[in-house]
Image 1 (cartoon, helix red, strand yellow):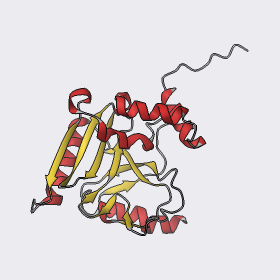
Image 2: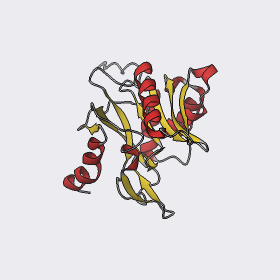
Image 3: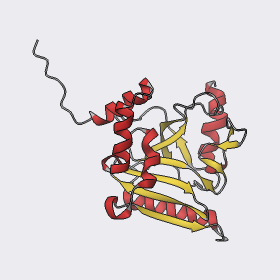
Length: 217
């Protein structure tokens, strides 16, 4: 996809929904986007996870889901001082058939003053899945979120999820230190059937705090 088409189909509609995609700026050794699904298995008692849930019977579903998402994002510290954070977006924006190994990558984004994450952002059409179903960038349609967000320093994760009886967001502090996420990272770093790129991202995360080797030449 060329730059103009990417802007027309991805960046422009996301900006209209209040999420401005920025060029570059993704930190090195960031928590891999591929392990974000494990945060759903984190518990409140062990990790400090907190949820904002809205039932499908709520007549103001999207409004209240947006409010819950923003309250979690601000109280946990998802945004930096410029309201920037990382958002998982499809690696191949409008061709879900291309790559099942790396379906999403982190992009740096800024939250604008007027935004609608649970409604307009979740309704931006991506294309058709390998099963022939319509897919959107941040979910399946308006009011049906499936997205992952991460603070720039990887200390806060917020994901949007559609449940059987409603939708909502959940926030987890220090997700990389939780048992479900760490178990998945370890598997990606050492698993026999993991792609080279996926393994490299997991290893980079695990080695992020190791001191650099000393050059004794």
